Every structure is written in structure tokens, then in C-alpha cells.
Image (cartoon, rainbow, N blue to C red):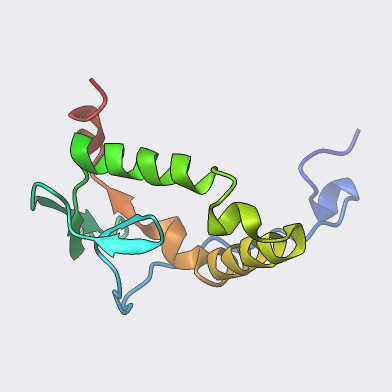
Length: 127
């Protein structure tokens, strides 16, 4: 049985290269995205984001707290109401928007693959 798709075992498979460390990028948004708008955190707190390959700080981003999460949940619930722009939009238009998001994620996959957030930041919010 062929294993791991190597030429030695007769299975040719294109294996994508590992992402290279991102050395420079333009940071456009560091706020919290709620209800299709960028917001500062209600607490005013931020936390650093680091490049895991170099350990160099990339930027500080807004830190959501309970108030911000509650606002995001309210916005998500509002988006599900029959009168919301999202619900009034036809399925093909929603699909185009979701595909556009997927295209952006694909475009920035290398950056997304190397961003690191300190795990300790999540531990304090998981209780």
C-alpha cells in the first residue's frame, strides 16, 4: 500500500511548500470587527501579536472583553432577523460575499499561517 505520496513508493503528489516567515506586512486593522464596522475595545486594552518565526512584535490589537463579546452576539442575532440586510440579500449575493472572503483568506494565507497570539491571553478569557 502506498504511503505518504512520495516518488519512492510510486505515488506522485504535489506537496505545498511550508509558508515562509512574513518579514514585512502592512497592518491596516487592529480593532474589533462587530456588525460590519471596526470598533475600539470597550476597555481600551490591547495585546501584542508576534511573528512566531522571529519573535518580533507585529502590532498591538484591540482586546475584546465581555462587553465587546455581548455587542458581537447582539449584532449576530440582529443579522439573523428577517429585516436584516443579510437576510434580505439573495443567496447568490451572499455566496459571492462568502467567496470573496475565501479569496481574501487564500490571498493572505501565508500571513495567517505565521501569526501567533500569546496563548496566555486566551486562558484568562476562557473562565
